[in-house]
View 1: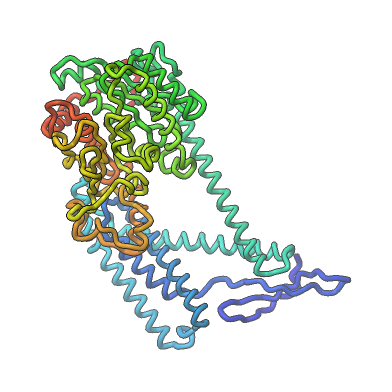
View 2 (view 1 turned 90 degrees about the horizontal axis):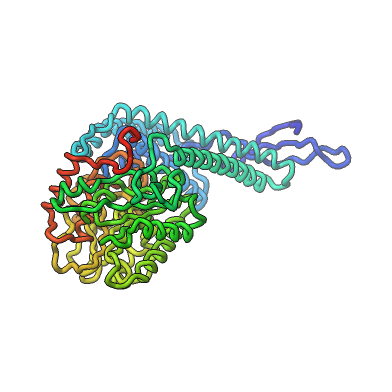
Length: 587
């Protein structure tokens, strides 16, 4: 395109140029078209105010401790989102009230605004080290140190500027593409829109490509057997006589079948003879679809004699096909080894990616597993049936709960002798269906009916193992009052949750408050700490499974002191890997 002339045309709030396309009919000059060529919009005062509020909100504590990196991310994204919201609100106000340029037209007001901005920036700088100290109790309990305030006040603005420049570059690219579209589309408005859509599609394509590349890397890691070796016992999938190939189990599946305490370890704790625990697993690629994997898993349980055990634990895994290793070890101690644990893999990527790429994957897998195992147990003579127990953590809990949506606790325990759900996401429909809050009920620990079947526990210490009013068939929602996954929902955007009020749990910081939009963002960012916080914080339930399994299986003679003794014993002895040569263990 040859630009013969560019002349500015002023319109309220926008600057356009007349561009001659050099095309015409019969040699006549081409049409002049309007294209928005404004390089940078005026700074939004409303945006700056909300950015300042967002920065202050980012410094307040939430449920989990933060590293300096997480704090920098939070102190970058919250101000940026505040500015974006303020800019939109300011633009809407100008649209409704008419274009106002009072700051530009009033030098005194403009100087006053600049002075207020400087004071606000200095106030934010001075408040940063003070506000970060509000996290002292949290980080001290975790054994961490406070985020570095010098790094926060330097890196957060730098990162904000970088992200703004990226946004400006994308906008400039959209306008440039809009000028290209103007050669095809006669309307400047449509050309600008198509330019923005084109950039959006390019960004979406790049994001999809990054996801595909990351998924491929996880798939390669899943197939890598380095540091792993097949079990030598027939009581494990992938061992002698197994119906599944060890290589197809996936990395998490191979870790599962190769880990856990031996019969001797269990006997050392209980003081009575114990059989060798059974672990069976089916990888994603071993069978076609959820139904095929579920049927093969049932056959593996039969092959190993799992249905002859006192307890069969059916676990709906989370992303990567993970069975929490502490949970798997603990139930074998609580059942004194007389247990068969079974699970399948439906994903080779982490839970957060699984939730994006295959939202229904956990539900489909749970439906197939529940149908296959309840049918297999029902076909056995009543006197020969094992206790069938369902287990799921995080995404696995959410997926398995979807199977029972609309059912009552009584209907669930008609097929299962116990259920342990750990770290259930707040968005679970079943949780919302069952949870109730009679007068005096704390918001962090609802009740289900009369509590004779299903119960909630806000931490492991609140599981009533020996409560006689809790029946033989038990359902336990075990969560943490400081787990962002258990409390994160869209309602945080618009209303203050009751668990941040006067009835907050003792471990929720007193300085944690509710900010519209910003608290929702804080808890979303808190998800990034799930893999690094120590046990007892956030979404790390490693120190809670023993009490959870003791509560669901309620073995005779067990109480809180027994669980404490088990934790000490496991720390001293450690769980060896039966059937796996010591030289083959990963570091």
